[in-house]
Length: 518
Figure 1 (cartoon, rainbow, N blue to C red):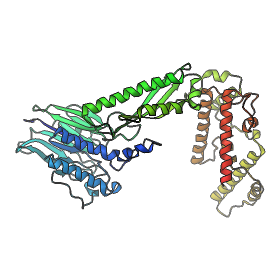
Figure 2 (figure 1 turned 45 degrees about the vertical axis):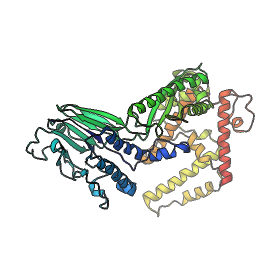
Figure 3 (figure 1 turned 135 degrees about the vertical axis):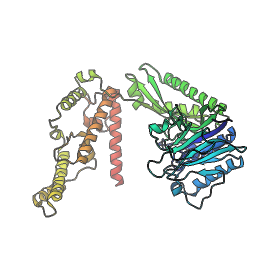
């Protein structure tokens, strides 16, 4: 057992080469903070080691990929190691897949305080203070499969009672975690912090010091390990990530006003901002470089769903939330405000005597009778039917040549194709056909064809669920497709069909612009 207490920081998975990947767009003023986040998060690990005046630092792999970061990654690490060297803090580094000693260029020399464990074997080193050994550290770097510290080193004189730390990258077998001789396992290879064992030893994946996207919510950082004179071990998270991510859920009633919705969202954003300010104050760190990204998912009841999904309300809400919380630190940035479309169509929609009701009943019938083919070409315009016929002939020619070779007799098919290709088809014909056809996978289809058709069918089902959730009857008996696609006034249309009319006209406008551009 340790006759004297000591403290160390355990960190891993810096992955300096990986960028932040959780955003589609961002204001330019955040650009530098996002690009610099991997470096800043790693630097905070070393800041914490100096601030906490730890005895040593343990690193358990995947700090960087030297080939992907280029020279700056290695130079950055060397600079941080030198900061610890000045403070007489040693570093024990068990490398992982990406930072194995085998891939580190020989031109880079680490300071004398850095000990890198060898590849393919377990090495035993000691931490000494004032000439007295306080801890034994067993470590290995990523290399040969199956290398584990168990039984890899022989006990040495006066070492049996020393507090032992195992440094390992990857997943350890359950029986290894049960070894009573190792008191703390410093594990690496997971971006998420996790305690996998508490008894007889404490086994911790430190996780990455940086949260990079919305799948990495919660706290990310390094682990401060404190070992008392009796050998009692406590592990505490030190937050280092300048970025935080959360998905917030909000329920909006049908009778709520936009102002009430904004007030509810503001209250939640204020609570997040207060928490960030409190955490920063407790840790004694600056708020200037921190950003908390919030993605809103909204359960909207009744008529609130179409208003939020298609109106200007959501854009206004996001704009106001950003104005209130994203200008001064601590920055809490509303990424979006997305109403959730229910997964299931309300049962009552199936009973409506509308086009949508007919459509739903038809879909239910064919879903329950999958063997029946659906053919709606008879209801399509002649141009779309001709286009589909041309594509079938092309496909048949290709299949004949694939199965019978280039010498296959396809003269009759080529004659038919020549006739069909003499016709002009608008550029949007293929898209419209795919949107309205109900091709079902055929017996001779390839796996790829079956997958594509299944994807198209799922896209249609998703669109159908949304239409039902919004209460849109698609077209009423007085609203013909021709009228909606024309430039005719929408004065006589219901509000929900005005939305459809506007969207259809925007689609036609985009098609026209593409034709002009080509």
